[in-house]
Length: 231
Image 1: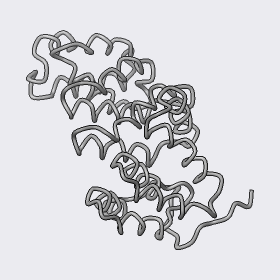
Image 2: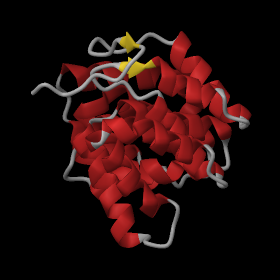
Image 3: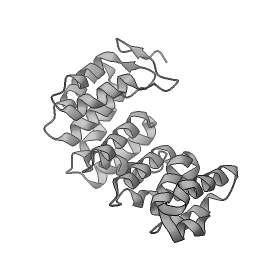
């Protein structure tokens, strides 16, 4: 199946071969064998497979991260989804690529990055923000570390922090603010989502609207006021 994909790429049996190969990986076929597909013309199939395999694709983080720079938006989006599921606090450099995708030229890829930031573990996100703070100190991304820590550790200041992010001059910071506003930790706060809904940026309003429409993960609930830590 891998040889067929290498010969014919995405035209191979209208995707059937890629889906059959995915089933084999779930049955225990060594994930390292997928590494052969990270070349043209099979790169699209590789991106699809890792986006479906999620955490199981962790041994291929380096190869997946390279796909975030691919010229095709679908491949970039699949790579971002895969990284969001298989990275940990040890992979700040790779998480940084997800964060930087907030500035992608394609709106669908930007939305994929926003969704990733919405659901990733706090420690994993912090590793990415710290990496960008250290390696791109003069960028908008470098400022996300302090804002994220403020949101995580100073809930009483969260509304002010989010308002500042959502009204920033640059679209990248506004997108980051939207992701944080709709991010479900132990709960999702309706007033925070309302801040994003009130944005003058239509892309930010869309993020907020879709956050209300889509089902939440099991640990998240809606609330109209911030909870205070009791632990």
